[in-house]
Image 1: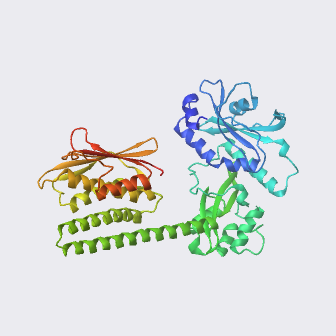
Image 2: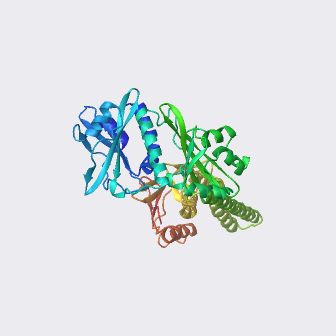
Image 3: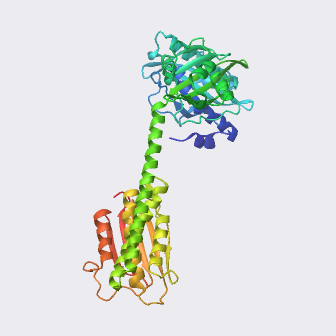
Length: 490
């Protein structure tokens, strides 16, 4: 299905400003579809003047659809639908005409021109499934009246208003969440049952009809939980096209105002309300949970660093060279885990960016081995983000591989070298190659029978915990090459 921009570029002569108007209109047209109980289809005039392209459509959530299938991308030539032609040519609302029949369903069609810059840039077709029409209630009459006023504003160029911005809230209210109609003075003329329930939760004991909505809200909502006075009066008085959030200690509301105009005069507004108390409570719980998780990772990191410090102290008090080396290896392994927890303590996500961890591990290995001046670890490529549960195991694997390369690839005291770590993402897997330019593998070396502790740790982590494959062989030119291939979702 082509997008609006694709259709505009391919088939129309609309400019960027025209597209901006259409996008603002489409940001609010779910409201118009719901108030109308009708499907909306946006038709764009063809560049050659041969017809119209269906660029977007919106189905109502308040009634049955008139279009079972998507029609975006279809073309209607001039003369096929005369109401489109007339609305475009005459720049006026067209309501005349008999119902159309689609799949044995009668559909009433109205066409609404969308003017901008002194010309019609699009036509909206409002399609009402007449099988869903019944004797309307007061709620439905209020919806339909508001829809008629909004469509008249579209045809006159008053909607969307000049300088309007898209909603700031992803959870912005819809018509069914709570609907209030206010007059030009900001007094409530009609409030839906859901809107009344919202205000009852704020502490209202009476009815909303006839109330000054802004003044009433000031009495019910404490100052610290509502916007500034100018915004409150403008939004709840129906004079500012925007959203705002307010509430008390128990209830949180998002309020959205859409001013209504007729013949250039302000006649009132639609005010939509949504109770987002549960959403905000969950947000607070998530913030608290994230802070707790970060604190846990921070404390684990501190404890691991304490363990590493104790091991270093112990190593200094031991005369045995083998024991010192064993404790240094333990310090390095504990330090690699601490680096992962330090990264997780800074930002709690399901995934962690591994490049920084890999770079710090390379620096740590050469520092602990006292080879920082002659052995350099270089990363070529990016690990990207990895699942948290894989990051610790892979950090241990990388640490052991780098340590083995430093210790066994460059045994001479003054020997310099370069170790290259190259991660690659291929078909849902992560392939990490560690190359060194050292002395290479000893003659007759068999990785399957090696008693090297570091290599045993690597094999266990790669094959058992990460569900991957480990390959160790001589390098293409010199030195050794280790390849770790693991699934990105183990």
